[in-house]
Amino acid sequence: MSRLHPLRSIVLRIPKPFGGKWGRVLPTALFLAPLVLTGSACAGNNQEGSHAPVISSRLHAPERTNTSNALGHWGGTSTSQRRDVWGGLNRKALQVHVTSAIVVDENGRQLYAKNANMVTPIASVTKLMTAMIVLDSGVSLDRTITIIDQDRDRLRNSRSRLRIGEARLTRADMIRAALVSSDNRAAHALGRTTFRGGMPEFIKAMNRKARALGMRNTYFADCSGLDARNRSTAEDLVKMVRASTRYSSIRQAAATGEMQLYPFSGKPPLRYRNTNPLVRNPEWQIEVSKTGFINEAGRCLVMSTVINNRRIYIVLLHGSGKLTPVGDSNRIRNWLLTSTQTVSR
Image (tube, rainbow, N blue to C red; front, side, top):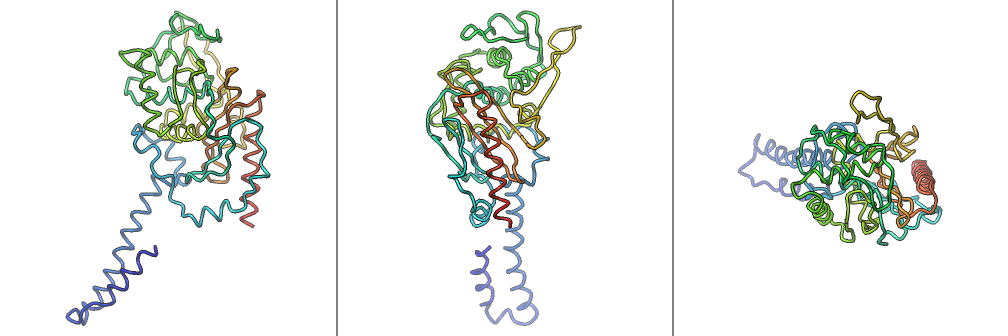
């Protein structure tokens, strides 16, 4: 607000012809005008940039598919405020076990990084991009899709309960199956049916979106993550996770702990649990998350979460153990909570 001071000095040097009553009214009006305008601008930034106050409203917001604004500006908090919040961070006190990691706050400030520019396979983290491309395309989410033999995983022979020639789900439910249980057949069916050009056109769209988001070290070769040529960096994936939070359908699916789907007519539903156990942990407030695993990628986990009323983006890649990213996530959360509590005292 320091920008208002020059305006005040100009107003006080009003020529004498504006004396009397108008001499008192005009300076007051001119002085208050920038305050009103600035207040409006701050309110606008609060809707688009400062995320924490509007979490609940964003959960019901319409899809936002404009990639040019996906990285926008990261938030409205001033530099001095950010220093107050994170000034007590002791980065040496945090030990994460994954090979590559990054933690970024809602204003784009990097709180922690470890090999954040290392290019590595990303496995099923890919499915977040798959969901965004489907939603960007504008195709009907109510259209029913049948799983066919073409959707079978012939690369790694992964399993799926969506039986070929029998399982039929709406495109919206295919997105849920892909994000919650990381079903590879569901992801492939989405890539196969979204564009007239089929899978090749879908993969091109994925790489175009990555470039639009500024993901300079990212490449997609398939829409499920089974292909080890799907590669990225922790630094790039923060941009993808942040962009994915702008889609209400992705938030609602990726933050679902458990769900039921009805792929077989006249038969009981299939029950699915989120592959990220933290989603079902009441101590965590997770907006978007996605796990991933193939041998080449190790254990991966990306998240947008709220810790101490502040949105935090966490990317953990190439963990050696099944629960390594989960353990690292808990260590990161405790580290941030301890640091902010120390600052508040």
